[in-house]
Length: 154
Image (cartoon, rainbow, N blue to C red):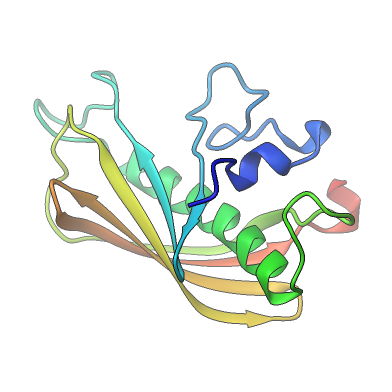
């Protein structure tokens, strides 16, 4: 596994996302890496990420899937072009579509593992399936359609 997450390669001016931006002091600071042919990220929800006592708020799970999905899309785009992360021009993706299925309640207070699997890389669009696991059990699954950030957002 690469020791530097894709989010650390994002240009400073594009690193304020609440989910993954290193320049957002209040954000989640999600970090995404390759793990073989899958992407991986870990996140430990805080006590205030609560839905009901003992369980994680579903909106947080959607946010984790969203940002791991766009980070995974950037990783896939670099790999697809046989380029190293950080080479220019940079890849930065935004979410065009997010689908989340909650399979079982996600327990609060333990580290969650997110795993991404490429479904499609086509032009400026990348589709990933992301799973969220707690203690080795998949609790949520999502599909992220990510597109390269439009010029007017740069």
